[in-house]
Length: 111
Image (cartoon, rainbow, N blue to C red; front, side, top):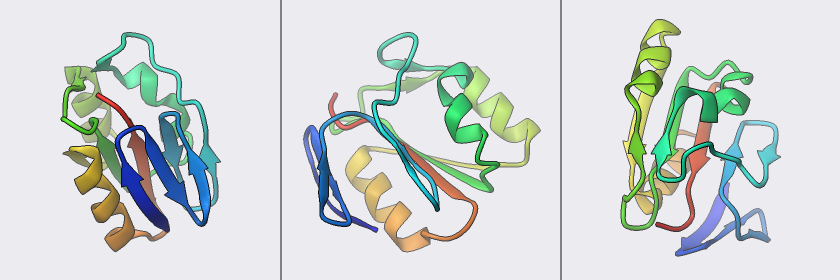
């Protein structure tokens, strides 16, 4: 469960993080590395895809500045993964309301 989120900071079960991350039902993948800054590609989501998500929630930043490359939609469609793309504040709320096996969130904390 995500306790709180504000620009550049997220608190999960009492622990604060200040870098982009991926949340799975069983772990937190810190320091999520991306290839091309604000453009998210399918290759940026390899760690998330290893979790075999049924739903992938992508938080595109505080102001929603990150964009998705068409490869993300393609890989989700090909693997029958429901894709939800929202500003990170909304993505946090969605993740908390859906937290269940098969739900993975990739969250940008800034931008």
